[in-house]
Length: 80
Image (cartoon, rainbow, N blue to C red; front, side, top):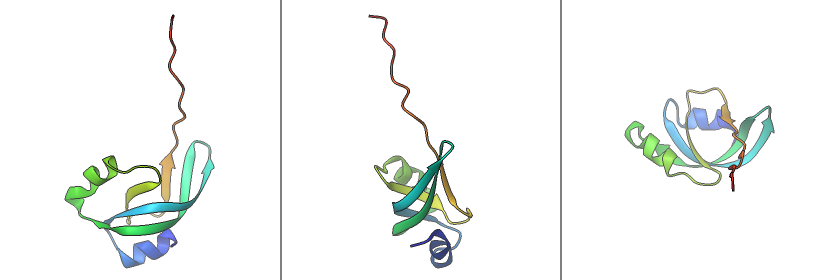
């Protein structure tokens, strides 16, 4: 489902979804196709996001598009 469709079905609320398709450019992942799991209350949104794994996210439908910053693992240095 495209993000614009999700916005129409669930206006102005948090939604939990699984990422189906995205494109990565310049340390950003732009998500354009999702499978909606369901709406999330404002009170539960942070907890649900922190418990999300893999390709599952929580995002607010007031946002025009889904953009996630990508942080690369830089590894740990050891002085052994």
